[in-house]
Length: 281
Image (cartoon, rainbow, N blue to C red; front, side, top):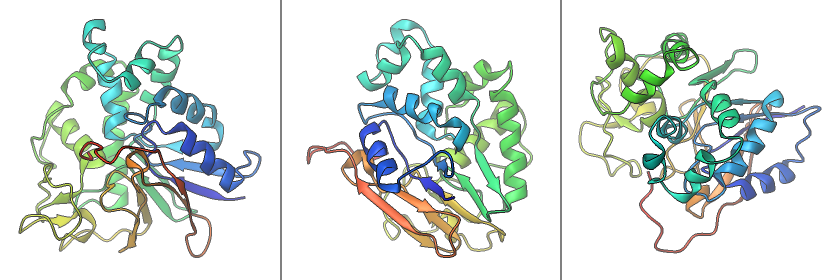
């Protein structure tokens, strides 16, 4: 039996299929963890969602910012839905749209397996969050997202403010939690997210740190696997394993084995793109 974490797919169905073939994935014995951002830009978001959903009995998924964006767009008028890119429109107007979106909405912001010794999030954790605190904060959002209040949450989740504080309440609190789990790269020691900073470490403004290098950060008893930061590439250090290696940008799709003593990395080619591909986000 093997447990593999897989980096951001962003609608790259063919790359995922190549990776599963390379891993010789067998649902009778193997398990998969998906680090979020299943959809957007890759041209095959519909096929990707269908495939990952079919693997649900053998996998765990955490939500990324692009997944939540798709869910929010699905609550808008049909005219507004037709303004998004063609890849997402194929999901929004598919005959099995409701089945796929309902399944996606019921995924989590963090997955923890203490027996295995790992936690998975899409982007990162606030400096002072232990794993247990992160689980509690995630449950706050998930209860709303999985319940009757999800439409209100999706309408109000956009925005860069406020920064996370345990004193926050209501929609502001939920928005701040979502931003940490799905949009974090750099932040200040106080936890203010620098949303505009997306480059490699060393390019950020003074006073900002990669979320896993913030001075005085909480100690975490589990290793963390995450995605979201394609310009960082494959990073393994400080108890963090970041595996978004830019599949949708012409990079690679990465799988990380979690149940071996030394995490094993397997990669396959990502999507073919033109040299003038858009700025990563």
